[in-house]
Image 1 (cartoon, one colour):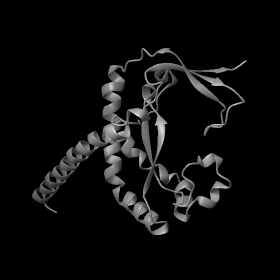
Image 2: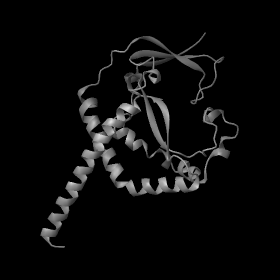
Image 3: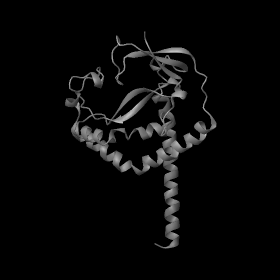
Image 4: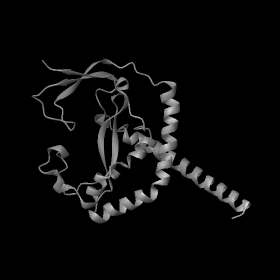
Length: 209
């Protein structure tokens, strides 16, 4: 391959990636509002923008993290993102997540096809998670459970939950491949490569006497 062909290849590749980035960013901006329940006020977290404490109470049902208790607001949060978090960290998240989506696109498509063949239905499923400033967002994962799984019962409360895991799902979970769609969550700003600190969450834990 001569110099001119190499230069042409680089220009074409840069053009394709640039176009893909712009299109993905536009789609991501639209999906971001949906994933943060912007159009579903009844789904928003009543503790959003509040300082909270986790009150341990053994009389309450066990949550997905194995803890018993509830969150209580103790005031308004005064947290504001600094320059590093707002620009540098976010820039790193965008570059790395977009690169991950491009490089891993064949794998993502292959897994999607395998899920469809193994157990027809949606490829992805979402979980409501609490992010920065107590804001709810939809966390995306590859579906690893059968469509026949009870939808109104949390996984940790199912009777023998392993019976509902698909063959492909078992493989995905064993190699943490079910979490790959979270790269998209990072790209649209719902999550980050570097996690949120406890300081950012204005969170404390207490025991109920």
